[in-house]
Amino acid sequence: MTETAAASGDDGAYSGLFGAFPYAFRRSESRVFRAYVVVGGLLAALLGVAFGLAFVVSVAQSTGLATGGTSSFVRAFVLLVGFLVVLPVIAPVLLVARHHRRAGGDARYDRALAAAGVVYLASLYLLLVASMPPEFVLDGEPVTRPEPSGVTAPVVALLYAVPSVASPVVPLAAAALLWGVHRRYR
Image (cartoon, rainbow, N blue to C red; front, top):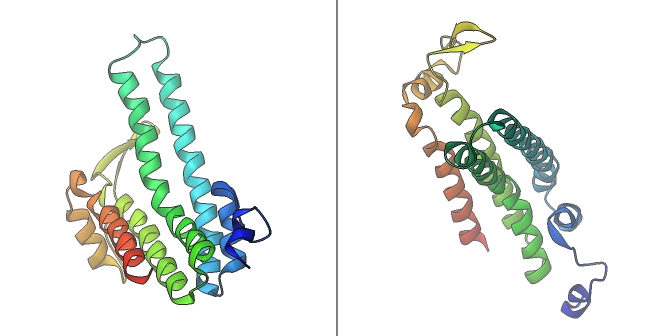
């Protein structure tokens, strides 16, 4: 297909975020990447809903309070964190769709970005483990985090040792890896 056909909106083009997912799925020859499109898309939607609900809860909890100040900061912070968490989940799909539209297909690029995307998804789980406080209150009752056990006990113990403030380093490193893979294989 020619570039003018893609630019004119024919079969080869896509429009916007939601059009990039089916376009990348159709154009990629990598089964690994196709699986990432499905899983990453579902997780991005789930994360979007979770952060959307967190925003609604933060607005509902701050109604009746004075406007501005801390409550406005919390609402903005929830949206910013949601954006920063979801963007690297959908980035491999957007980058592959753009690459296929502009330069044609490359299965190596697709596989590499899918692998980097999976690493980022795993880093989100590691973030949750690392940021879990030793004791917290759940439904009004104090709860302590479970002791590490099983095959993953050394990794979990290492993640528990990470200070909660430093826990975002794990997904930040994975997002940097994603960007590095894009730069390397494009």
